[in-house]
Each structure stands twice: as structure tokens, then as C-alpha cells.
Length: 103
Image (cartoon, rainbow, N blue to C red; front, side, top):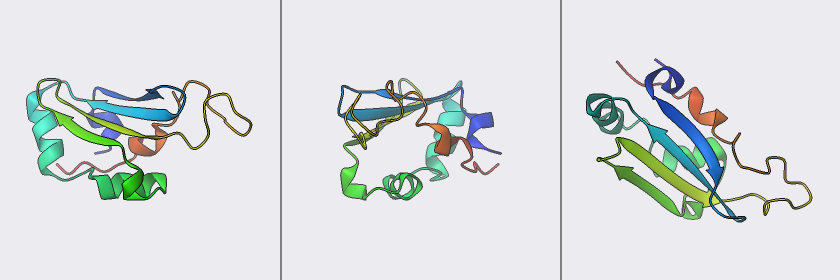
């Protein structure tokens, strides 16, 4: 199963003009705990997926109460600068959609 079919919410957004935040939220605690236990997404896997050094990951946190994962990284370009292609950071989540979640 793909993450896009498993998670309730997969999104990205600006976290100020210099950072991007990614949220992955699950409908049930069972789905959330399965995702975490399966090791589907680790800082190393996220860094490889986004082609950044692991040291660039500012935040990689699991929030049990929210049944979610939050990841924050520096924006490749400051918001609104030349070469920047997503003013709101809302389209950067796409590489996460195809992650395999084991049954």
C-alpha cells in the first residue's frame, strides 16, 4: 500500500520564508503506530527522498497525541526569491505519496 492511500493527511507548507514543514497524519492510532513501527520514514529515508543531507533536517518528530509526524527542512530558496517555484510550499509533499507501507 502507498502512503497516499494509508495516511489521512500528507501536506507541506511554509514554516516562515526560509523553511518547509511536512505533516503526515493518520485517522487511527493503530495506523499511526503501524507506520512508525514499520520504519517507513526515518530521517535518513526522508533525506534520501528529498536529496538533502540528514543534517539539514531541522525537525523530525512523532506526535502520538496528534497521530502524526512533522518534519521541517530549509527551503531550497527563500520564499519569493528568483528560482523559487512554490511560493506557499504546498506542493513539496509529492515525493512522500509513493512511499510503500507494508501490510
